[in-house]
Image 1 (tube, one colour):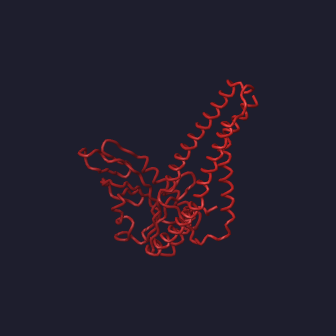
Image 2: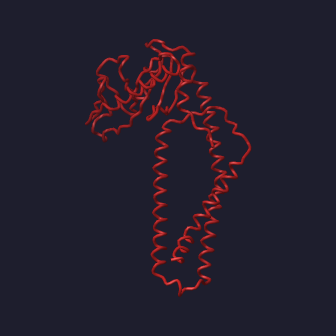
Image 3: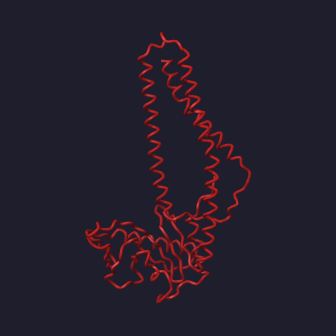
Length: 295
């Protein structure tokens, strides 16, 4: 029984060494006294929530693989230890050689992992710097217009919010595959309530966009004390939108983002927001789309 326990512990030694090395290197990096130069309040990038979900799936898959390998190793050690008469077997040079090889492998791979940790930190700092520059340049070039991505709204998120003199637009994006080549054009009919795709119809995206716009309007009302014109928009990249009704103020607007100028920019539409109002709305919405400060 004791020998079985020893075997199982020995099997975990390389993993324990690797964990110890990573924790030691992390503690070293955390002692860095130089300060982060980025003062810009960074906002998340487009599709940030979806990327997080995708990364979580990959991480879970890797974790499950490690769990299975560990359980398999421990099971093999346990079964073998119960079927070997340890009393008749003495330790010899081969046992010591395998232990040395296991510890050496753990130190080697631990060194490789810890060697990459400063580089990973450097890349993260570089990404933050480039994002800050891009964000500040975009704000300078946008004039009175603002676009903010992946707004966290409680249990859901709003893909994009566009603020222009015309109003505030809560944009929900949906991806729908086009028909096979030769089976009709990528055209969707919209009557203000239902999307008629070739072969199927949907109403849930319209309802979702409307709910999100209402949430955003209520949020701006509570946070600023003002009433902002908030419009619901559904973006369908790659699709031609065929309206069968006249667009009204209360309708969810369905657009192909390539042809969104008619909706977002002043033209025949009235100017509803002046620059200070745009700034007040953007200030409140940007709070919901900020990148957490680095640890």
